[in-house]
Length: 400
Image 1 (spheres, rainbow, N blue to C red):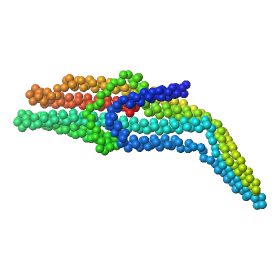
Image 2 (cartoon, rainbow, N blue to C red):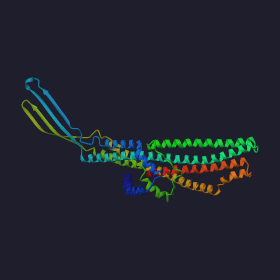
Image 3 (spheres, rainbow, N blue to C red):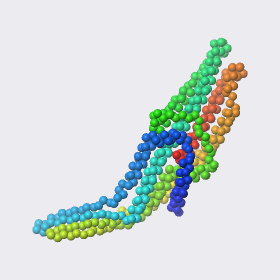
Image 4 (cartoon, rainbow, N blue to C red):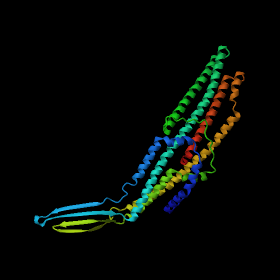
């Protein structure tokens, strides 16, 4: 029953692959230009490709016939007058066709495993690059927010410096305005350093020290029609599940190979014997009977195949639950970002704060409370947007 389920799963993969390739050809990943640059320059990707090629080559090591065996013997007689004798045997062993077929299929699966390993490394690296892009965009946006509030704080500090010089405010109010300006300056400088650090990390990942990334906003995110339809197409492209499916197929082939290896191994060769003027030439044939070496091999292979199938089913269920949780979190964050942006757009009164303060309609403390409130709201919008962007990238990492 499990084997039938596994075969159905593989057929599902084969049917879906052309549709998925068409989707991949038309879809544009976030930060697609950065990804393209990384695929051309990243030394880590190039190294992973070389490792994959080495693993594919290693799958064919020892795929030819077993080494021929040459045996020679030289005998001298006792007493010496009976002469000398020498023997020569050259043999070549052959495995049964069913064994050769199973081993050839296993080599193909090993090649596919190397390709899947590269795919896992590639997707992980490209996801990390996307996350660094998202971090840089976030830090850059936060730095712009602090820069704008820093300009307002500078204007406030200069206003209260003039008032203090004119004797129109207390030293406490003057100091409060100056400390507010220094605090905003310090936070802006800290965010700028984080932005610079993200840019440095991105250049390392991309593999180009001259690479410059610049993006002020996140790309629009389109909600999926439903979780089920989205997951159905995504499951077939999950490299971890593909690797498990490949392991299941490999374990099935090893099971069939262990059964086929109960068949004897044939050997054919040439034999020669020379003794005191007499010589014999002929063909030598033999059978190697696997009576002892295959003890419990079939049972061990069967248990391995059952364990691999169970692991695949378990991981599929875990992936389904994990992605469903992330999907609902993604949907909730999209709505949260939309609500925050809409509220900030409708009720933002920052442009009136300084005018109200200068007109004496509000006190300095009221101004600072309102300015800090709007700063927190703007930062919250970008914090939630950043979380949404990272979650979106993780959900769609398998499409890279």
